[in-house]
Length: 549
Image 1 (spheres, rainbow, N blue to C red):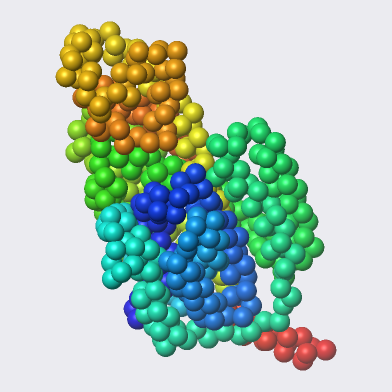
Image 2: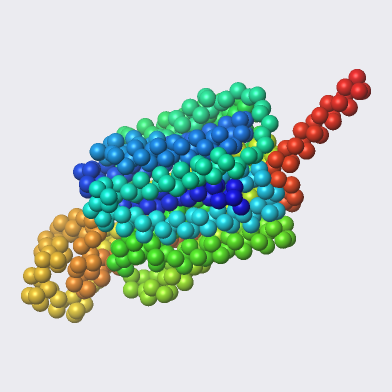
């Protein structure tokens, strides 16, 4: 449990950072005069953390987990300090990229270390605690981020800068705990490092991540986007050729894809990552834009989702450790995710009571809790113990790729449809007596807060531009008269329905795929014990062959 506390602190750093920064980014961008460049701070972090993940997995299999976990924490802490003192958005993006190099190892290595020291049957129970870290950070992040960004200064330093500085004490404690108590025995294996694999996977993935993040602004078929597609595909083809040539020395050995469980679970990780982030991204948007909640308040409103996720993951872990059976959980989990997204699609309107929406969040959370860690467990259990790091890192890598693609696709669908949906809602609302009476009420028409809508109605030819100006700043919706605000809220809710339906379709494919995954009986020994047994068997075989000769 002492080792677990150190691992959980390391993971908490990475998980908290994603949610705490997303809440404060608007304030940061305003202060550094770079609102239009804010996407790059996310993109830079995402690219480096995704690329670093498989590299940490492979290097830790060769040289041991502890040194690389300590390096990952150190890089993350140094990156956090550098981010604190950024003077422009470009600087911040560069420091976030450096910070991402550490974050890539925090998540994958913590799960791999648990795989080393805990047998699979017991592992599900401990991984439940790790999922609880995610849930806690998802609630705490918006609260802490909103609070810090709202302060002008704390101890003479601008409030938003503490968003990064808060990582430093947690990181130092994690460093001390891991350095002192984590002593995982490791037999060093002499291997070449697959640098060409690392280069080609970067060439393949970076352009695709770039276009996923920036494609909406560039245009999906613009020159820059098409260049990214071509370079990305060529990079992935080159990576596959390099990995096949490297054999066992490869960053992600191709023989692992010959393992049916590994290859199916990799596809599943992409699909679940897409669906999970699509849903988790849309729900706060709904709460903030449609329901008018602040980022801090929307974090609290997400509690049912987080509690459902924690309860389900801990329950799944306990049952798996007692019975040794685990396949039922991703089957139930993906089914619940599909059900939750369909409920959001059909039942959640702009004026739906909050209690009903929270009940659907709970279903979504239980689905996630049943699915996420069970997939990591099945991958770790299906591969040889010597590949534990690579397999765990690959699972995280594919989930991150799915999450990035899902975020880009779903946001693109939302923002490309919302203008038309708002216009349609306005046309329907304009015919109602309440709307007409508001239009002829001088107090409503002369209210400065209502001017965006009044101007839009006076100049219908520019109405599409007016309705889509909400894409850059939706805060004015909450200040409008109720009759004028309703079509905006309805337009957003209708666009979100399309996204939830798309998410349900993606997770439905995952549900079908789960049914075909073979349930491999869980090993009763840890990764280290399994590796020791394999080495002993190899020595015995070599001795027998020597005697025979």
